[in-house]
Image 1 (cartoon, one colour):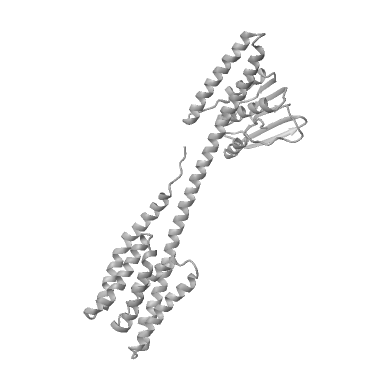
Image 2 (cartoon, helix red, strand yellow):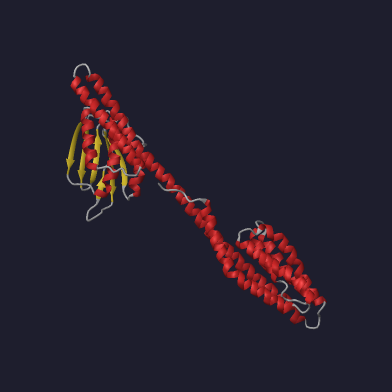
Length: 384
């Protein structure tokens, strides 16, 4: 029996990818933060201003890889948003934007509405604050604009784009795992439908035959006790066989034999007073035998239960197997209900199940693709 994957499967897959990202990326980021701190520190108190911004950026990245960024976004933006102007105006640190760039780019994943405005605001803040350096350093405007405005803004744009692309990668992984979960759930549903169809084949067929045999035994009880006893023994054997088949079905051990099902169908039709004509021109491909046996069993039950047939023609040929009966009631073909699941399985195996009603006769045919040189076709019974 197929079982669905737990939602934990999706979480664990994303978790492994994020932990891998953390293990690979965090050491270089820590090293880069340490180098920037050394480069921008010209007095001991500069560390007090710059270090919190770098630390906030590293914490935001760690929380992002843990898929728990929401709680760290606002504190991180406040800290790094304050460090950048202090670094520009007080310490003269052109790299003080680093923490705000990291936190801001990661924060874009939390923005659900007006993301474009949020991204524009992020870039504008970096550029405007960098341009504020002109308030304390006016000697070389070009150098100030390049060092504090152009480079920080360009790198912030690059990091933000890369972060959005990386987050899209995680979204694709998440969608892929969700698709796999849905496929597993559909597989469970299909397996349950198949099991229900097989159980219907066994129980529905047996119960109806038991009903017919008991009714026959009641009629024979007074005038032919020996025949009645024989019918009851056959009924007992049929019930025992059905119990065994149900157990086999439960343990996925059930196999049907088409030849045995044809012989069983003949016996049941003859017991019900229906003439049977069997023509064997060739054998059906063995790969389709079990499925055809299931359909034949269901068909036999339907004919006995619903039709007023007096004759059934079963033809087994290289092209397939055809069952035709003359017990049509009504002008339009009945809907396939019990055989609907089997029809889907025939289609799933590359075959086709068709139903025809013409001149008081009912015919159903199913064809299968060729396993060898010729085409193997199967004609199946009807459902009412």
